[in-house]
Amino acid sequence: MSDAHGVARDQLRSFIERIERLEEEKKTIADDIKDVYGEAKGTGFDTKILKKVIAIRKQDKDERMEQEAILDTYLAALGMIDAPEAE
Image (cartoon, rainbow, N blue to C red):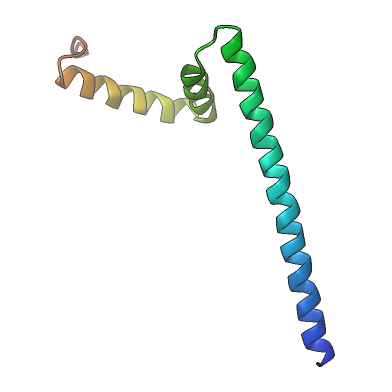
């Protein structure tokens, strides 16, 4: 086998091993997050709502406002809330 093949093989092995380590870290972090949700649930918090709050906090203000306006429009169309007043 030529040196080029050996180098490529070593690079491939390095990439694979790095990815495997990161995947293991990701699993560990996911387990830690699951534990925190369990703690929150044990103290009486609603984990579904916590997840929604986290998703909302990831959005910027304009994106959040746009989604809330669309949601309100849909809910009003279904009669689930009063229609927003026109300005």
